Image 1 (tube, one colour):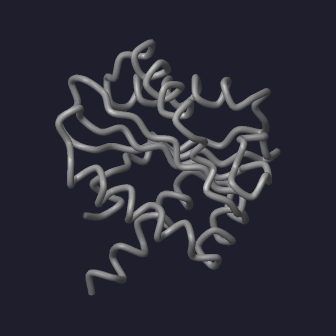
Image 2: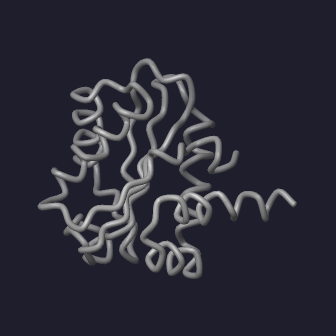
Length: 154
């Protein structure tokens, strides 16, 4: 599995700020609707439901919200870089500024887990996270995110 299979370039956004975690989840649902034809209301509901099980802020300013949705053919993603971090109830209690959200079909099992592992592993790499934070351009962010998979495949 590679980032280029998960993420469309147009599913990458940069926001100067968001007012809250809830607003951020709504923004992610908007990206899913625009880029992947996901139902906005169902996506918001699924993201909020998943967060109620336990926050997906994994520490180091990174959050990995995810949800299972109807009518998706495969696992897809959305990426947001925030210029001003937002409180996300992360495990280290630090606000987040890097958000990678995964949306999986309801029936996805192993595919969803592999995608989550890939994203988690990649965003634990401090060098990649530093590059993401220092390049607030969607095209550059897409290149950075798709680069590790290409290097691993070589």
